[in-house]
Image (cartoon, rainbow, N blue to C red; front, side, top):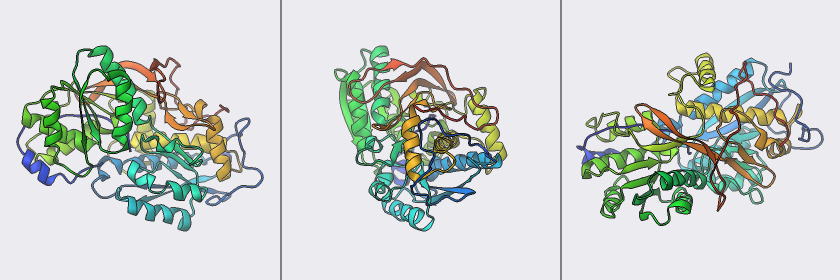
Length: 450
């Protein structure tokens, strides 16, 4: 996947134990309404597999077990809680949403197996929110070949924005290139003398992030280090960053490698200004990983204080935000117990978007109509997200921006307003539209055509 948020810790023992033990986290009418003007209402021919008069079946693959389950397995619990909330209010155009989640353990081979099951046995109408770049890329050809809408992939890869090759697939979160551009511009403006190191996942996450960072920091970058997901020994990479004199390090990595980089920094007494992508900066998860990897010797929850990251919707450390309040109420009404987390908000945000898309597809949706509705209404969708989607017939890219934040205690302090950009040489600019207000009943308003 992608997204998520921040935390901290401390001390220097147990890095040897860390490397040995880090089996890691990688890596009526109900809620409906009339279809938006100009969108497909599903009348006429079209594929309706997974659709009945009373139900619509939606599938997803997530790591419910295995090394990537911590944190990421919470996402579908948030999604289901929101769908249950909508179902209790009549569903979408009178149809209840059946949500089927299959466990792929973050293994691409298993992803292929469970998605095959979702499509051919469960016969889902659409797949929504499938998590992971290596995992979901394994099923792109299959889903598009079967004509299954493949919406809101939980990853910031640019793979999902290829409408000519993959017309069924749409991204969700800001892609890694634009996220890196926004963070890099902030660094260039506020740390103009910094010697910048890049700590990158050794796949397209790192490739896209480096491209974005170089747009603003080309002359400041002194070192680039990559890690291989699954290899917990990152001592050579962190040592190389230190040897190069990097006093500010930008990390595009999953949460386990945030923890590992912090522990290795402690071991080396290396204290650069850390900047982490939101996919690796969730405070609660990183904190628990630090304790686990260090076998309990690192427990200082302030280790990440002052680290810079970003966010693109309200988080649990913002209890007065109206979206957080609404999602907390939904979780308490329909969740499986435990606290609302940022991962559960992530899942609810995806579900909220999907409900709008299904509304826009009209009272008699088809798979083809659902895809057309996302393309036509995508830029006008409004919800908990900070910046607009980039959906159109020509673009299937996800959200267009983030706000830069700083980790303080267990929460985040905004450093900028919402900043938006696009891939390539498009500049980073402020986004000044008013934030969407959550509907009183938690059901999105019918979107207008974009």
